[in-house]
Length: 253
Image (tube, rainbow, N blue to C red):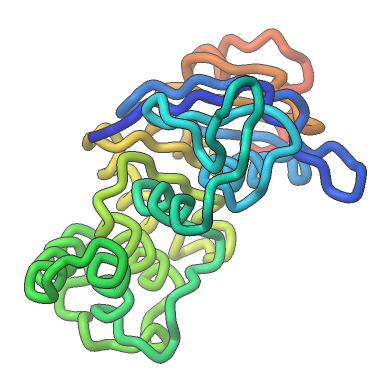
């Protein structure tokens, strides 16, 4: 079931430099939010904070009302154990720029590993689900291929299937097409588009403005670690009065 995401005062620093600066954001359950902005604006770091791949310097993140990465005792927040963080991450699918498939495992083995190991699914159930997911991402019949036998676009589609195999409530996509040759971008975006509004809350960092226009319910524009514009996709892309956003859009369209 899709869950809401609630970010409050999210702040992240690296070596004293503030990369994400007091960000507040609400993402409705089942919606698609796209994060746009120039390189270095904090988009990917913010996304990584959502599933606690980056520890916060300030603020709180809640998914479905539950704190991510921390528990509250009185007024204080304490980081939870690695096993609790792993359990939380099992509900959050993430697709990275690099496909991160295990090179010495087949396509099928890549997909069934986490459901069997983390969710203790029977192997037959995991395999059946994996075959359905491969069909969904247009890769039926490639179960026994090795990652190096696939194109970049096909590997990214396997990575999406692998994330979906855990039945996540939330899916995070960190520039999922940026490492692909231009002719392979469309096949990956098509798969993500088909997932939109399928009962999973989605947050997508991308530079693909046309795709954002098609798929996003809401768009967030970041610069220098802050959200400088946000709202319904059409309003941000076509009716925005922020000069910085307008200039950015004019240079990438």
